[in-house]
Image (cartoon, rainbow, N blue to C red; front, top):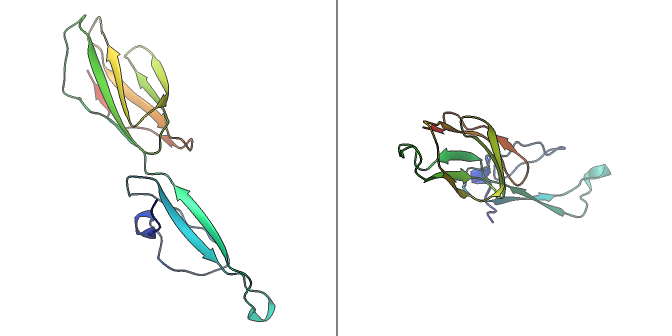
Length: 142
């Protein structure tokens, strides 16, 4: 876990009545941000400090590991997908005919395919462990 907010897009210190900060985790792994909250009452009297820890999953990305590989019709080949973010994932890909959903996928997924004709496989969507959606762009292999 990371307690340094620099990889989450927030300043090191701050103050105000409301915590409203969009967090983007660019660290590549799960990170934590610790807020120390000091309430202030009438007459500027400070109350007891409270600690709030926010855990932020890494940004989601999905891509083919072997985009330029090819196989002959009727042969078997594995299609390798690499998924960045917080596992487990729900991965949806299209085999040229229909969408196929893979639940509980890890950060690296190997799927064996045996096409009977020229087929284009496309990554359609990914959801991470927090149910955050991601739509891969331009991730197809034929």
